[in-house]
Image (cartoon, rainbow over all chains, first blue to last red; front, top):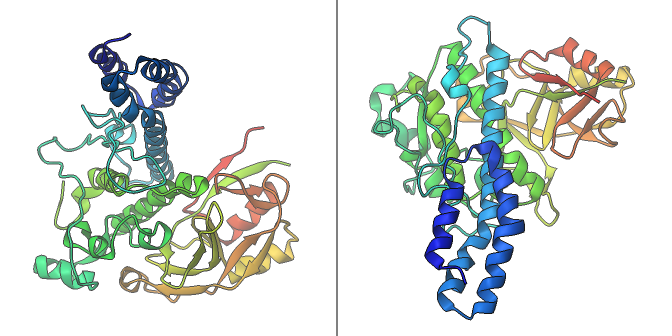
Length: 254
Length: 140
């Protein structure tokens, strides 16, 4: 019977240095080979420690596949924006580094389950932040507010921006409607979820368009499968958007 | 006949009067309110899984005899962002409803919610404004 610690170390080694395009292959390997053996061994062993160790691993293949889908959607949105605006002279083409995010999961984040109730196994893929140093990249988050007047919420906090920016939701308002129950109204309209987009520059309107396209692409696999993203998946995607466009926001968040 | 994947501009999101039927998978939209946040000028827009077209484009699609679609009414509104960013009055819009199969009709939606257009449908779309869409030829 395999030692539980040895099994964990082997799995940890297998998950290290994964490329996003290998996530699906790894998911299949785990599901069809490793977990089959582990589950059978745990069932036959009557060893509680082994059984307890195997149980949380059964969701990992689904989480890896969800992470791969999330990466592909993010990359697709980014590539669309670059193709549309390459060579247009100031149309806001993304830096090369941001166009090809490595999306390498940091330690502990690959397949890390979250406690959100969801029909989709949670997979908190930490997006790459190729433009800002880790110490400056604040992940997207939700706060809590009882006010739905989000513009007032934003301008009360940033009075110097009033008249100069349009207020934009990092995680879109429509998730309340299309994925009910994942996030609360009080979270969506909280200050932490609001961004100021400077007015008057066509570049910023183009950025907003690219952001809407990216979110639209993000939603598609969930709609197709009839599942819902977790709150953490929404926040991770918002963080990626912040990483790519946050230097254009007012206040600047990157 | 050649086909193209068309990924249109996304000019907004679902307004509060949009109704989704979650009793089926994937959920279907039974009533559409398209809430504009901005508009860069294209004649066909998306908010997955829905597509809308200007009335002028709808007429052109009908006049050209393009297959695979019919049109429905929708509600159009502006978000606070849209009120600030959109200076010109919006044209009138129609909700594009698909009646056939992608890669067989002139217009269709595939299983990934991608708009699939025939070559002649793409030409009609381009005549009315497709500057902000990504168009990819489908390789057989």
